[in-house]
Amino acid sequence: MWGHALFVVCLSVILLTGGLTAVIYTDALQTLIMVLGALVLMFIGFEKVGWYEGLKEKYNTAIPKVIVPNTTCHLPREDAFHLFRDAVTGDIPWPGLIFGLSVLALWCWCTDQVIVQRSLSAKNLSHAKGGSVLGGYLKIFPMFFIVMPGMISRALYPDEVGCVDPSICRKICGAAVGCSNIAYPKLVVELMPDGLRGLMIAVMMAALMSSLTSIFNSSSTLFVIDIWQRIRKNASEQELMIVGRVFILILVVISILWIPIIQSANSGKLFDYIQSITSYLAPPITALFILAIFCKRINEPGAFWGLVFGLAIGLIRMIIEFIYSAPSCGEEDRRPAVLKDLHYLYFALILCVLTTIVIVLISLCTPPIPEEKLACLTWWTRHKKSPDIDLKNYKSESAQMNPANGEHDLVESADACSKEDAGRGPGCVQAHLCA
Image (cartoon, rainbow, N blue to C red; front, side):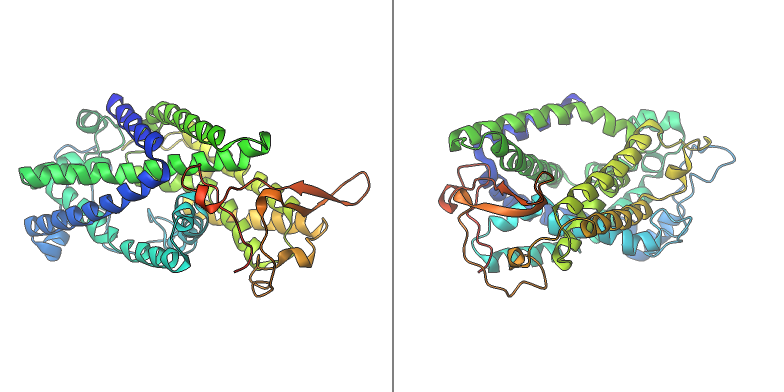
């Protein structure tokens, strides 16, 4: 707990002194370290286990010495080497893999501020596209750098990584429901020689740093631009910078307080915890993004109330999951049916569809956005020309209707600084609606 807290504090120091520039430079260096280190560990692991055929043989017989009687928790999954698994009994059901994960992937690569902010920081459009393509290719590597080494770790150390007895698991990793989270670190400590072991520890720390610094910096930017500037319309650049850094400190405190919740709620599988939380919060944003791009009839009231509806449903499911933790091996599953019978990937797909319906219905019941205001903003109007707009002095007519007189209100847009100032502030960019 205290080690995690110290790590988060160190990250905040990097962000407070360097901002987005520090994030990008450290990520570029850490990516190289992570890829090389993971490549070395993969080959060492495969050589130790007898390559792929040896892995299949050893994994299927990797049973811990201490088991829970009259249960099958200790047995490796029969579908462990299959990508498409049963739609009902699979831990990652194939319909959820194809459709549910697609919803989450669209959110991550198209709307997640961590990705968007990197694209906006590119030198030009070609560099932004090239970075996205490179990131897509790098996403192929986790199957060989993370998944396979994790299976190798289970095959080599079934008593630790594959433990099922709650008392044994608590002694090994502190979690009663399983110790699969230690699979990769266990492999590093046991297989890597001294020099490379330090390199791999640096690799894992680099991966954590890359994710957390990006999240902190992006969250700070969103708060300053979307919230603080609406409250303080005439705020100076220095004030915005100070507010952004203070918000990072607040996020650090929240992150430290959240550590015990993650440790108690991840069911021994941190990957499942991360994906489940994303499944509860990301689908409404994905639905809105797709509709906003491909449907000209969507307007602000539909977008707002659709997001409110979708996020509320997702938060309810997330809170229920925090209240009812997953059972240990041999324990009866007393969780509500919405948890134990509805996989989080199915929930993501259902939530995306429901949010889409709400957005469309409310948009159809409210006035549309004028056609001339949609130039370059949707797929169907992408070729319509629109003059450059200086957001600093621009007021746009929204599609909101004033209930008093039935006329459109004027909504003042948020201020934006010049491109030259973008590196100094939390993330201001002068916008042009059309190239």
